[in-house]
Amino acid sequence: MPPSGADPDPTPWRGEIGAALAALPTGRRRALRSFSRADTGSGALLRPTGGGPPLLDLASNDYLGLSRHDAVIAAAAETLAAEGLGAGASRLVSGTRPVHERLERELAAWLGRERVLLFPSGFQANVAAVTALADRRSLVFADRLLHHSLLAGVRASGARLQRFAHNDLLDLERRLRAAARAAPRQRRLVLSESLFSMEGTSPDVAELADLCRRHGALLLLDEAHALGVLGPGGRGLAWGLADVAVISGTFGKAFGSGGAFLASDALLGEWLLQRSGGFRYTTALAPPLAAGALAALALLQRQSGAGGALCRQAARWRQALAEAGWGRPAGAGPILPLIVARDEAALALQQRLERQGLLSVAIRPPTVPSGTARLRLVVRQDLPADTLPRLLNALGPRHAAP
Ligand SMILES: Cc1ncc(COP(=O)(O)O)c(C=O)c1O
Image 1 (cartoon, rainbow, N blue to C red):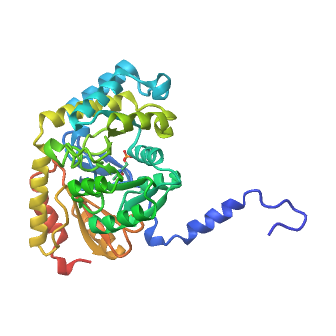
Image 2: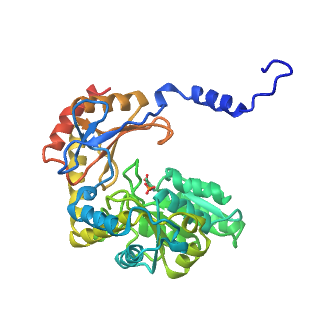
């Protein structure tokens, strides 16, 4: 309390935020860690900047190692030299460069969609898409384990939200049917992902798209983790499915660059251009990142079997983990969660792996539901051949795990 007569505290919010911070459980507090590349070749080794031996990277989403690919680096470097670093303005002012238009055209052709719009990040693309497609009169159905960015979009749109059980199309259908009965003319938007980043799982996308069509709902599918890896030639699981109305993708994962995009038909593309503040009122994607993404796209087209090969490698890891008693991680892509339930067990496992020179991150609530803490293992194309035996050795038998 200020002494009587003194001015009231002009920053009461400091006390509130300080108290809220102090109330966060210490075991769940996050701290930043920084790493530098420990070798300039494969990019698979990371050195903690605080010291300590290099760690083999089983954590990042650079699934095909393209962030270190010569062609990707050369394309970004050339554009950097020719165009400078930043675009300097939004796309609708003077920020559009030929590399943006080319990337949008070539991505649209690769994905079989009429229109692609670039964004500086996937988070932003998702918020932009949901706020352009839904408003406070709309009803949004979101998978229970959906990425935070899409939920942030729902909140910003003011739409009503219903969560359906993870990848449970029967639950979704029941909800769609009830909603259509209650308010036939209300806009209904369904949000899901084609490869869930913390689960490694995928919905049956063809079934999901068909369900949305039958119930007159618009489907926005986040393909952030699937593109480059899943579907024919790495084109994602929405490939060939016109009933997936909008695809969201990022260049920050298998493309090895940064930035993102939304892909759709011409009508929705024009609507997104006209209505999404997240596209109109932001500085255009940095041209060197766009050039790096374009080079990555060319590589994906040339090496169209890379995603399939990575999935086959991931299947060998799944089988070996199951045989070692760890249970077969769900899904078919390169994300393999080892669910150990307790937060402390996941952290202890992360530390055990680190002592053996392997970096994999414990994922805990609120990122995942309470009681499902896990180690998130990522299989990447540029890992050395002895990685799996090293991992199994470091994990040890399941019954002796923390
Ligand atoms: C499923 C999903 N969607 C969207 C994003 C956001 O993409 P970006 O990293 O380009 O912002 C991520 C990345 O964390 C993600 O995992």
